[in-house]
Image (cartoon, helix red, strand yellow):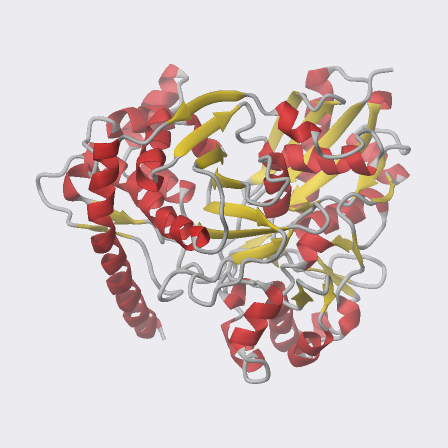
Length: 512
């Protein structure tokens, strides 16, 4: 009998269900979207039941399209977007219809109280949590405690996104090391929760779920879940991991010094190392890897693909309509137009921090903007400047990581942005590195989840097969003249970011 693996990639925009054979080939995939809710400034929420329904619908579509017999699907693994805080009572019932997701930044006051007890510098060095502190799970749970005390009093466990789905699949409540490392109270070097940090939060330690390896089989499908999904109860469910770590595995980051660039709604550069890469200035954010004994450390920009999507929706509606009429990809039309603009976009700069500041920004209040816009600029210049702005922001991240770890002059790119040859050339020129695209682009996180399931279920002996699955499709080399343009542009780009941060603080003060 042929055996298959289901991988779930529970992302910010929806769930992708993918079916893999034992060789690691993706034979079918389906995507089911779900919305993000923005009740107030800084509040980014999703409904956990939307995640579950997306898993159910995508699984059923996958079975229908692939015609695979459910008896042949032997295990599943899941990658989930990070820093989720799903409150459950003792019966495992959901205590809040919608819950903050990774980008929710409401818990500012809670971080201030916490850092009166623990120095922020010390907290970062213990946890490696380099995102702006309010994004981390512990502070969101503290917000629950302060603002929704009646609900909080009934909470038994607070779990992450993929852990909630695992609970729905098996009835087992747990997390894995990679997801726990984003809790805000996890000690990277000790590989466990830190009691001192938990005490400083004022939260009961019992709220944090048990930690198991990413490859651990946590159970089999419950009869009710099997019925909803159209699968069989004997299917094994493996714990899986946080999206950053699953994507690192799927992007071949299986040993020290390997690096990749994820180009999606947000974009980051991550390197795998045997020790966490901690730096007080650059503040890489670190997750425990799904591979034992390794860490994945990254620096990012939050609004990469989302900045490009904003450009699509508000500046290029005619291209969007044309793509719909002609059944083409609107992003292909946009990047083709961008190619009409020269390197440097005729001296137009774009700062991509439209979703607020990252760990590398001078202020969390920074917002994006065009710099140098005048009447001579065309839409092609605007589109190209957005693409270049993302690349230059990530070049700052790359430079910081290069000071902390040695890696090769070859960057693997994954995610939606990897499809564009125009964008790959921009990245090659800005990074001054060879940009490698393989057959694994938007499947990296799913492949990582599938690999966890395959190893955990005993279908694979180890993760070596991940390298074999990748087939190089293109290598884009930097063009010297273009790189020189970006080197000259970088000081202006950095200075513009400082000014935008100052202006963002002033605007934030007006709102208060």
